[in-house]
Image 1: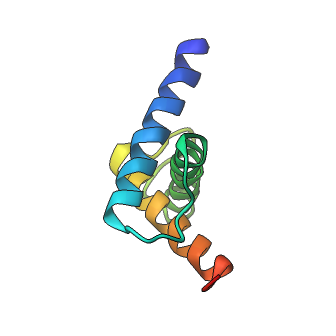
Image 2: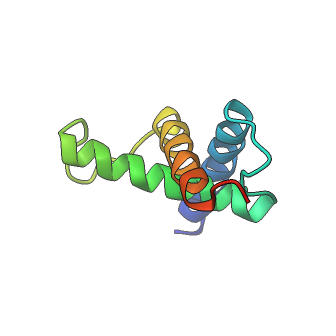
Length: 85
């Protein structure tokens, strides 16, 4: 169980890091914790999209590339909400 959570955190961190790299913008969330949270939320979001559209079956999860794509989508939503502050 603990190794599963460590894997989720590590994959989330690297997915969030790549998403921030591909969409460099000063309005992106900063810091290690927010980068990890971005990746985990992105993976969960892309898993939901994949299951909704039929790309993934019940119990299947997005892989690393899906987590990065989901994180980029979450960043775009973040920018739409934050705006030009």
